[in-house]
Length: 260
Image 1 (cartoon, rainbow, N blue to C red):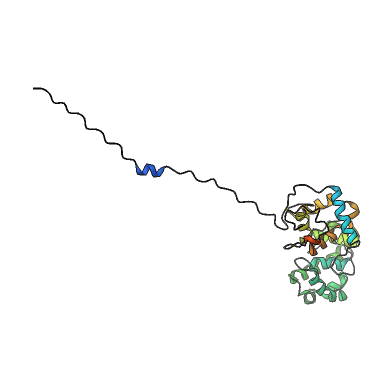
Image 2: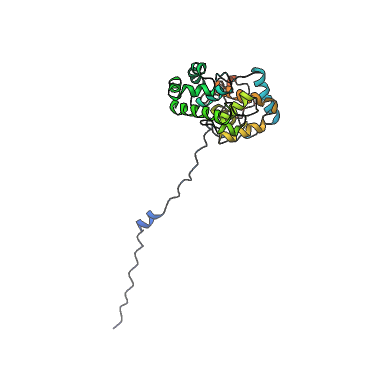
């Protein structure tokens, strides 16, 4: 009897694995980094091209021509009242300080008279100024120290001025410059902004800007340089809406967003 051979059943085609198909990751679109925003006012600005000595000289020549003898706006009658006014001006406007000190300096224009006035009565004179309680305490303390350690006179060195209560580096630089004619650079919020925004002396701290300005500004301009820069920042190179159209140095300025 002949054997009957059976053909093997045809194999079924494999069913696609849905899970495996789903596991195949689609290539994700490459992430793009957001475009860099403009440099905010007051922040450090890395200028594409540093100012040349000729450009710096030209800028300050223009400042000098427009305002040959710039004056500080804090009212005072002697080095002591200047020192007190600068100490009181921290986190306050010059106009606000002047309003309070006009009457104060009529009765207390020396360290001894300030001590005689006393902290409580001093507070009454300066209560319209921010942080007036702390400032009154500092003014009385610095007056006492001037009498005990400096013969009642404003000291002539930065370190000695900085040793007085309430006085920091900026205070010392203002007093040394305005009272004693030293070539110092006091960096307030306006000078800090102008130094960075224009690219004249970029820096992350007031000290960096101060040293940068002292390095690039010619000696012939240093006596009035900090006043020119303060006034420029206060009235032209404003924090929010700089007045580029009337700026004396708009053609030299490195700020990428200037409007001229």
